[in-house]
Image 1 (cartoon, rainbow, N blue to C red):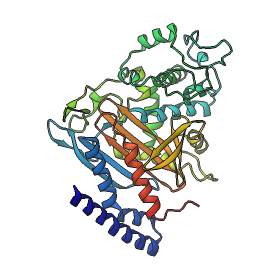
Image 2 (tube, rainbow, N blue to C red):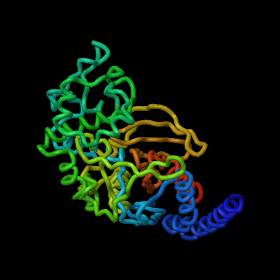
Image 3 (cartoon, rainbow, N blue to C red):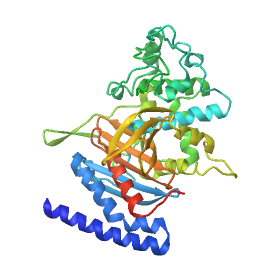
Length: 392
């Protein structure tokens, strides 16, 4: 182990010296980032080993393009199928921002307002169990920001993705439990996004996944993104695992249903990079054509920190944490990130963009609840510190 670490730090020091020289001579961040590839790859591989992840796929996105990607291990341990750039991973709660984007599309089209009551679009929505009589009406905005008063429902919600429409409607009529008065506190609710999926369906006449396919994925060219794992070629589908008793135990894959709105999407690095590019091009504010699937002002609105909910330490740095619309927002002394994590039985993932610096990172893992955000934060810090990507 000591020799391994010594070798790693030697690579790190030599690489960073070279990077600084390249960047100083060229002023080209892409060239400089590419010089960091050995360090980036070492960081993600070390993360995969530490997390006991059978497989890993990761990418650096700059100026709307993947400038480096890497893979590690297997999508299928039993059949020894290696991960490649076309491998399809379930991305869990990274799905949520697509639902939020669909809601904002409908808002921009004049079909809803964010401060409309949920019951206006889901008449059977029953709120009789809200803790106080003086509670405000629950709105779409409350659902988007996890401030509806619905309780945190992980990992219960993780296992309900294949719930059918009839069962969910029955639950909605009977009423959900509430732990807080709406609007007062952040509580991460998968049910909130299942309700948003129902609003999309009831307004558009299409299931939430069909609407997202037609109005977001297709315009972005995300043609290798799926909702049903059974539609993914088996040779490309990442199987999920849990590390138990020093071995990998395969986890069952769940089909797509109403709760798929909170975490059912499956995708590839190449496809997801197109979505990251959409969020990166929201900045800076500017004149000119605004023809992407969601207009720039709405993308920036999604990325705005609407509800602060605490602090978290990443790699020794304390970051403020807040939630936008289907997006997590962090701020530490050096950087702001906007993105989301994802975790389900068998999977852990993370993506974020850094609007101040113009790049983003994404990482997919096929082991339960892998903390991929830690790996992404570590790599982001190295890029920022050592490539001299100074924000304007």
